[in-house]
Length: 354
Image 1 (spheres, rainbow, N blue to C red):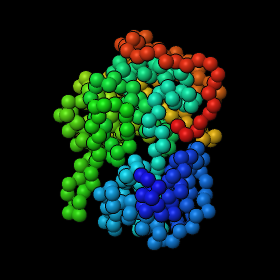
Image 2 (cartoon, one colour; image 1 turned 180 degrees about the horizontal axis):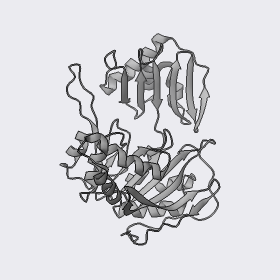
Image 3 (cartoon, one colour; image 1 turned 90 degrees about the vertical axis):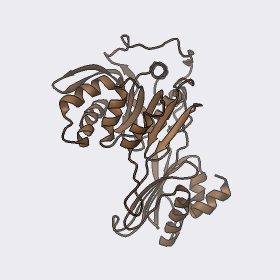
Image 4 (tube, rainbow, N blue to C red; image 1 turned 90 degrees about the horizontal axis):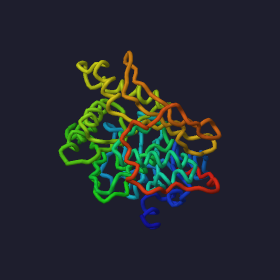
């Protein structure tokens, strides 16, 4: 979007939208507007009226095709510039509209770029590139704003250019740097309560589109079952999940499929997870504003007492990466598939905008 387009759509928020250091803007009330700059929260001096806030939201939603009213008091939409808008209105909120605009500033970063920003080591970036090109299934875990989408986008961009990739998301966010990509997005119900297209439907439909890989932007509910079934059919893929550690991510992935129905049991889900997922990455937003891969684990494929076995490959100890006891030696990594781009020399400067 041009500066004039930003000004027309976002009004007084336009300077924040143009600032490349601001990652997210949120409005708690017309008088309390915050931004996240380099991973840290700031209260701005901007004051708006309630009508100003509503006008900004209505102009932004005109492009997205999503709607917001008393029967649908939430909206999650992609804006024209690629940012993501989320709004909640009364009576869900007590008085004011709650607005979040999440900007995606660094979606074109590669794994090597993230290593330069200290988000991971160069050795980890190289191994991850090899793992992606070899078709391993990867799960990215972390909290809100930890950098899951940015890391997933970098992983997807390491897919060989000869492959066809289908991305499946609630709202379009991924922008992999590949020639053959189809992006699918969920759709909410219309005024008559019809026409909803959930993630589960998109995952099933994607399998009919001749994918070489499927990428699920985030699994939150029963769609985890459909993703696991797809990955167990020999189709490589990746996805993200909210969790506090790689172990918690696997436990959660064993739990979410149970939401699909009473006929789904843990006895089925556990072995399915163990067979479907190869690597789990945990990302974290540190108090300094630095985003970092703090843990990389391997799923061994073994399971005991419904507990999927994990081996730590690397663990961030607060100052450096410690090598774990896990190994990838028995996995079919195609180490000749990528050029050796590992950098040596001085340690790069910290950049919290990953």
